[in-house]
Length: 222
Image 1: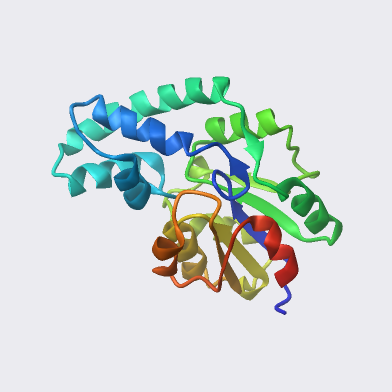
Image 2: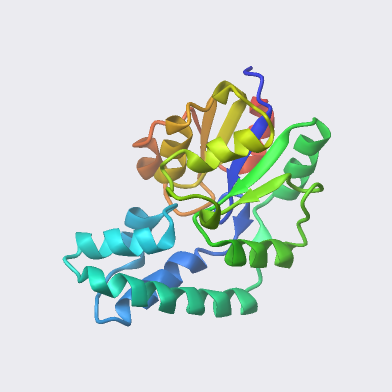
């Protein structure tokens, strides 16, 4: 198998089970502005994207007003902050053991997300996941100028750990955007998981190397 040194893992739906609360909240925030979109539509259109960009492109798809994107995003961010305060979140089955095992094997683990740093950190605090124990670095939408599927986050992760060959990187996520990001970075392996936003039919469109039920099954690949 390929010599993978760095794992870049998406957060919600890939390592963390938050019951799709992000996309449910986003759906509510859009509909409060007089629109009528379904959760299913939001999952197909927005999964994995930076959230302001996701709202903007969703509004374009439904012939909404682009000027509404910023206020909807602010409303969404506040609603999500409150939802996360009250929500019980947990790691997706087997994830915590998987992270600890990968660390024991001296692999670097970077968590990357289309969220802001504040929201991502809120999730990690709730899980009691610590840098250098469960993962090596967190890269969020705040750290980059171009959002996924642009490979900037993966490039930054490689730079942090002096990895020059993308062939040594595995990217895993639960959305088409995650897989496209991995391919755009030239990752040695792209893995889609069925534990989050999108189903097998959606994920197959991106042509990942593997589609697994959960991230912990990656262990068998390595």
